[in-house]
Length: 212
Length: 212
DNA sequence: ATTCGTTCTTGACAAGTGTCAAGATTCTGG
DNA sequence: CCAGAATCTTGACACTTGTCAAGAACGAAT
Image: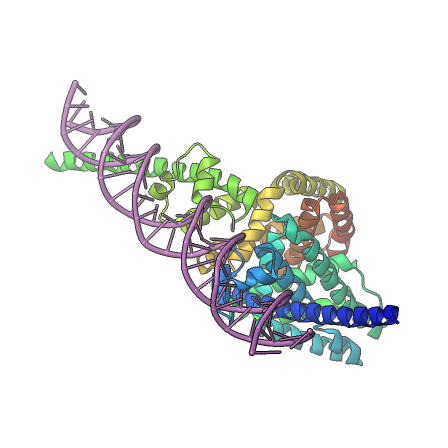
């Protein structure tokens, strides 16, 4: 009997600990989300913990309760960003019944991303560059890059499939192409160039049939 | 006669001023070059004027004699970097007599750049990302980007010409493609991935005949 | 209601930042 | 050689930074 009680107590304690961990982790993500706001606004170089705290409902000390240091926080931000990012086009890929439908769905989402999520994406490019200097970022960044490459590959494969073809280049080359185009368009867009979005769309519209 | 003397004096004074300006500008470039060393080592976010000064033969005060502020210095660095960068492949383009020769010359320089100038190039990617946040960088960065696009276009055009063809994509798409591939390879290379360089070369070797 | 562990706030610390001004040094024209 | 300009050094300033520790507020179990 003593053993049974001990077992039950253990289960209760374990459940409580899991619950606490979940709460702890949820808070971490809340904080990371708040940090992403400021990071997207100011960029990595200009963002301080106090600035993050001021643009949020938290005080600056709380970040050190949930993160071991600044890098830990930003790594958490990067990982959280990833989850939101890599499934952006999956709906379009899953529902499109023809090449045209896929093209238009893809282009629409692409344009929307450029317009509405410019801050988040410039942060991604910022952090990817930081990873070239700061080893602590590299693992997460390389992982996200792989995921994004896979995302592009899913689009291209489906597009090719709908035309009874196969993509003519490697996943790496395709990702480089689209990522490079988006990065360039994003910079122009942020610089106030109104033609950035339409030019990106034209380029992609013309490119899709030639690479897949 | 008075007028002649005045004229002569004016000429002398003008010449002196030009000389002073040249000296001033030469010093600015010396300082910018020193700054580039540290910037390439630490990245924009972690580089301070004092750090730059310590890694050079100058004291930190000098930088404020030659530059109005930190952004001014870094803009000068960016512009100076450009001049060295955009002519890297011109020799190869000018001397290559066949597609193979151009390919091998291009690939060799590409590999050498990845190996030997990784620091300078990660700085370029860093500053290009900074331009998405800091408006002061945008003009210079966009200009360099255009120059690099033109550089790639010269290579591709020549390659196509040597095969009696024409490039199949726009300058923007070609630049996006090669820049994206290089950026990705650079990150992998800096992360210690020994396969980064050969994989980049394979990719480019395979890509050249299909895009031109 | 009290106690105890979790969570959060506040304020301080040392180190580092860009900027500037006063003065030392060097260069240069007369 | 010397006065005045150009160049450079030094040290200070006000401010920001990441980090941490002491303790307040809170919540839950006894």
